[in-house]
Length: 369
Image (cartoon, rainbow, N blue to C red; front, side, top):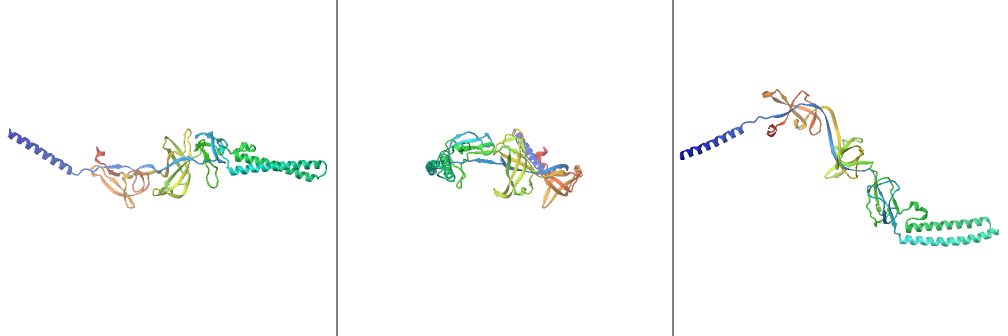
């Protein structure tokens, strides 16, 4: 029994040894190298770039009050369409005490002057009726009375404007009613009822009551790297894709390239603007993030091969042209002149023809299987 056990163990060890030897021998044998093969073909190649940016109205107008005060009414909301002249809000005037005091004093003086002018006119009129004064003197007194009346009216209007923000004579142009200066869509109303607002002056920009823009006149604004900006010209077509609306694309026409670069993340970039051509039914909102695809260069019906088949050596480029077939297959290193590349395929200007076959990258084991 022991004799058979020793034989079995010996046989197992021998099998393991032989199997290991065969495995290592197979591994040491040179493997056949198989390459991809490509045939040059006529194709169109275009070099494109993607520019990130956003969609915004060409012009946004900030509506500001003509007087300082407190918001008492808001008649519109963001998203509402307004026409030029439509009332957006109403302001209650908080008068300046110095201006109010001066306006009240002006009214009192105007009343005194008017009362004196009326007395002088009545006296002069009696004398004129008795033919004791000339018509010229009477006309002067009469004119003084008219001037006093106008001054009283002006002083009263000034007091009403300082106190209430509007007078009886200019009620239709009330500065307490904040009106839109342009037609468009209200993008934002940053104030609420009860907020204090101030008018624009030399010391501040004033409080913005609303922002209005024409949403039918939109532009794409983005930045392009300095290495590509030299290939742009005004009028170039662009394809705009909005991140929130992946199923919609818009055409745009490049209309502005900044003459000055700005530094961004260590790179010089130039601002560009393009007029967006809206698609009917497309609901676009201001501030949408967007990508613009623009064709920098294009070559139609040119001989091309995959760029992976190109060998780059300094300033020269080569391909390996396949000669023969089967076991007699050889590869001839051939210099070629390349042109435009889109990152996948590359244009061949000189060196090979459409009848040649070229060697591509080696097929790895996973590809063979």
